[in-house]
Image 1 (cartoon, helix red, strand yellow):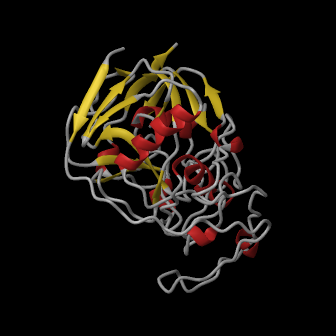
Image 2 (image 1 turned 180 degrees about the vertical axis):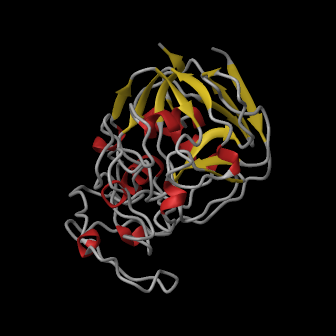
Length: 310
């Protein structure tokens, strides 16, 4: 595979939030003023999701990456990408046309990047919800932040960097063994597992995801919901996840290891967040954001290894 060189827009810098707070076993729910007034009928969905008992180093201490950077190997496959179940729930126009996609083996993080991992690697915690705890997903990160973090994590683990970054120009070495963002097609493959689910894991949505009905005021610790068949958590809900691709329309032609348009103004987000309703956390939903924007509902999950590994 070759190299993909892409760049656009302005890079804005956001101040880092204080170090995240670790309170093992405690998850406080505070109702947001914009949240639905009615409590869910099944109050069990509000149960505390215990935080992982782990250290959360301050920026001036020696970072400890710990177990957060584990990767699960997901086999190569061919699947139908896009809105494959329009009769179950209405889809958005950009989820069509449905088309056949083949992707290679993917080595994916089982959870979203946590505040603890981000802090250990970078020495900073940009999360708006820092008080959620170190085991909660990092958020309020730009696309540029995400690719830079991927390189830093690769360095920390002795892997070859996937990206060459020169200002706002990002050159992806698609043969690299290092950490990187998944492509949009790879992300959907991870979420679909080996079936055709509405949400990752193909289980009841409250079992699979943190979303508007059970966590409208903020994210929850990673890895608390039911995993997919491949052991991946939180692919739907909690926080949106950046992927590599520029936003653009789908094709109706079959594709192998697609990487999206060669240029654009916005990058794709996948998965939905804690503030979104059921329709927005489906596996085929596509949203987009300028790569220099950072908002509190957007985080990241990394994969590693070459594109199209078979």
